[in-house]
Amino acid sequence: MPKTRLIGAWAIALAGFLGVIYWPGLHGGFFFDDEPSILLAEGIRITSLSLDSLHQAWLSGGAGPSGRPIAQLSFALNYFFSGFNPFVFKATNLAIHLINGGLVFAIARLLLTAAQPLARQRDLLMTSATVAALWLLHPIQLLPVLLVVQRMTTLSALFLLAAVWLHIQGRQRGGLPCVLMLLPAWLLLWPLSFLSKETGVLFPVFVLVWELILHRSSQGRLDRFARVFATLAGICAVVVMAYMLSPRAQWLWAGFEMRSFSLIERLLTEGRVLWFYLGLMVLPQLEAFGLYHDDIAVSTGWLSPWTTLPALLGLAALVWLAWWLRRRAPLVSFGIAWFFVGHALESTVLPLELVHEHRNYLPLFGVLLAGGWGLLQSLQSKGERKTMGVALALAALAYFPFVTALRSNQFSNDGLRTQIEAQHHRNSPRAQYEAGRVLAGLPDAASGNSPTYSFALRHYQIAGELDPAFKMGWLGMIHLSCQAGRTPPEAWVTELAHRLQSTPFAPGDRTVLYSLKEMADAGTICLNRSEIDRIFAAALANPGVGPGVAAMLHSWHADYLWLHEKDMPAARAALATSLKLNPGNPSNRLKWAQLIYLDGERDAARQLLLVLRDQNLTSEEQNTLKELLATYTIAKP
Image (tube, rainbow, N blue to C red; front, side, top):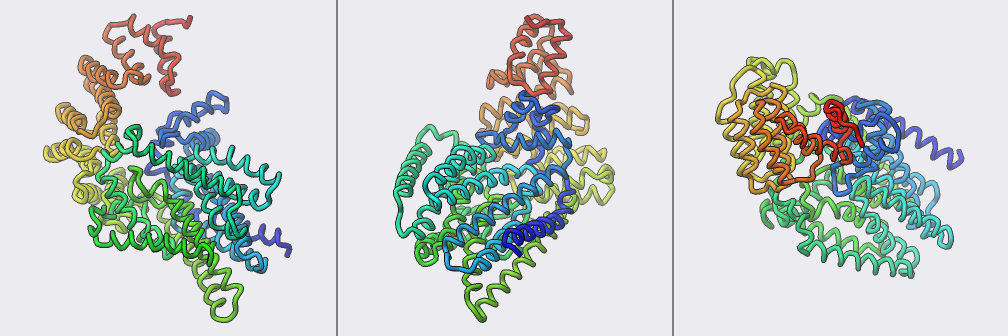
């Protein structure tokens, strides 16, 4: 069979196999960060493909400094053609993952061929196909496919991998083809990668390690392009470090004020986390995987826990090994370097959560590439070494998709997913909370005497006991009690208020106040006004709540006072405080116009509404504005 037909047949078979494995998981729903980035993102609910609608989708993102507009556009297109159908969203993710697998195959083949130019084409093809298949089928890749919002990760990887492939191809060919390939790689694909997710900024670093290790090895020296590139990269690194150490970067480090760990503690912990990731890659075990890994202890010192120092020394040994192998086995050296580069942004100094599996979407390629070099060596040998290499590859090709299939089935519905994760991660507050939340949504939970109520309550209680800074479990207990017709104990409200005021105010803690406001407006929570006022006051008294978040909390409190309590003076006072903290917020200014109109200040309300016609409002707010203008019979000049 001709080589191209063989590759095509392999690709079709692999795509079909991947579809079968992921089929149960594709029928699961939205979960975790899907809600704020997709379900609650008003901008992606487009009803046409007009430029205004696409611009609205472009601006709809709230994740990361860039807003990740390319990913948001893809979500908007999914919504336009299928509404909020999670199957379609997840199937789109799977299609992107397949395309990325093709790019992994193409890059692996380029790198393996350059590293072993005298190897038989059949062996090179088999090794490249094995690397790509393992990368596609590995269970650590499941969340980037089935957690819809992680399309940000897979889209960024798509453009980055395509840019890397073009850069390598261009540099190997030289001349005019080099220029024609480098231009789209650097001027088009790199920006697209960054605008999908900020990890795309690492593209020059991936390329740099290729230039310094593999291209140098194949050429025997660093050519002029590589020397200039390395010099520019060094200058950029110095500039970035100088900026991060300057007062201008205070906004970046301020994120640690909302975390339960410091910068030093994060760096110490990430040493252990990287070995945890490597363990998941090399010998994946079903019970070790999970959406949440907050059961991994924070390292508070070199020997607390004791594995911290050995983990860091082990990473240093890996760096030394990559340096030592740069001439002896450059492809292995490059694979190790690729793994570290892939984690350079999310697993180092930034004040992000400590552990997430999707951060390994690209780094996994480096580990598999190093293994692919070993497989290629065994295929070119004879006897036991060849048998061992082929046997290990076949075992991985059988075992990895088996674990992935089990995980996919687990993600087929929320009940199964959350209960299994709570069992596998008994010390994870978030896993326990999610298990309780899903149970609390079942009809039986409305009866205080039902087992479902008891199980949900127990999950919430465990979540609160595991983490003294965790708040959602206490709100869940209060809501569950109200739902069952019981009056929640005063101690629960006191504990929730205490935690909101006295423990670090994490980004997710805003959800507690927003949910409380929504529950009160919907009449599904039985707290009285003094209790709800006390909870909001406690959060606002937290020293970690900055002006921007405080403005948000005052605005939500105003919603409660206006819509639920019908106390217009109190609502005006809360909203006025919010506008004082953030005077340019158009949403709150629209809300203010409604409040003062209802309070009799109609001329001031009309003037403000006229000004707001040119402000950046969501489509829902724009409709509200139009209705108000029509109601007040104001014609646009």
